[in-house]
Image 1: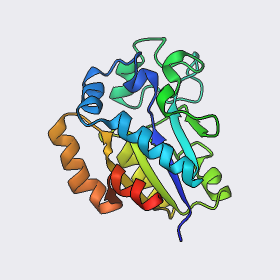
Image 2: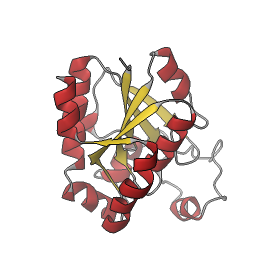
Image 3: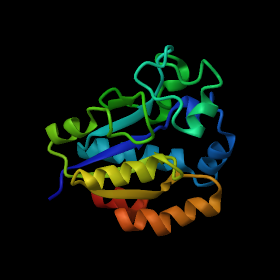
Image 4: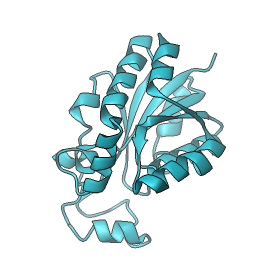
Amino acid sequence: MERVAVLVMEMQRGVVGDLTKFPDLVAACDRHDVIANAARLLQAARRTGLPVIHCTAAFRPDRAGSHTGNCPFIVSLLKDPAHMLDGAPATEVLPELLDPGDLESRRHHGFSPFTGTSLDMTLRSLGVSEVVAVGVSLNLGIPGLALEAVNLGYRVRVVTDAVAGVPEEYARAVLKHTISLLATRTTTVGLVEEWT
């Protein structure tokens, strides 16, 4: 049987929480109960003894370790010099998704959780061969996570009711036309039943 870990992508206060600058993404999460579904899934994973790893993003105040001029989206975000600074409340994982036994993999560059982090080594040290992805966004983070995980040899499952993107039609298209080519699509209820 596969050793599974749950990867929680950027479910941070400054991304989809009370300190967000992305109201459309928060609205998409609300429409689909993404946070509630993720919380339910994480509780089931922990009860089963599966590792939960929060893949988070932050910037140093001096931006060291981050390419800041190679991507229009990052250039736009960093017009605010206080955006997602290491140690700031905006970088914290949503409290309803965090447990003291969870792990965190923080990155300072890019949009996907593997490149430039120790996530791959952490998963291998835990004997993980399959990852389950929840979080945001279907625009960048979730496809990047799935593609890199597949390239590194992991099986991937994406929980379709615990991910979000904008606009709605695009998010559905990514699930159908991109994620389906990389990963098995599943639901919170399906995985909770499987794990219990």
